[in-house]
Length: 159
Image 1: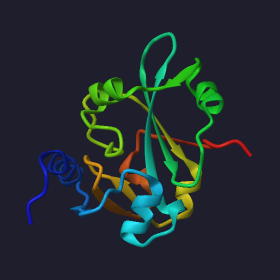
Image 2: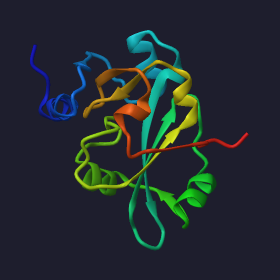
Image 3: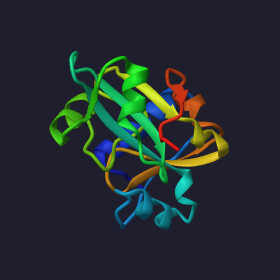
């Protein structure tokens, strides 16, 4: 079964890193955490949201990998980064990742960036992440931190 060019790029990164995770494309959208959880039949907490932010002063990209149920606190992430951050617009997100919002994977980006991993994701031995398009996903077996070793595990949501 063939997959789209963007999904194949993610599959190639996974394979090159030695992971046997398989990218799948579904007929329905997996753009939101609700949609993705419904599509694969898992708990919304097991969905990895890949959110791109931009630092205020240095304009550097920041990736936050958050549990599907958590609302990311920009204030907390700004403390980790050391400067104020803003949610990136679609153009900036595409430029730094090479992917469109709704399909941004946790790996394989066009530019290097700081990565923060929601510690709540580590409660699960299986999570699902976007794979390059708004209807492509892959299942991460084991801890997400093994897939993204450069990521810093932090609290991303207040309360």
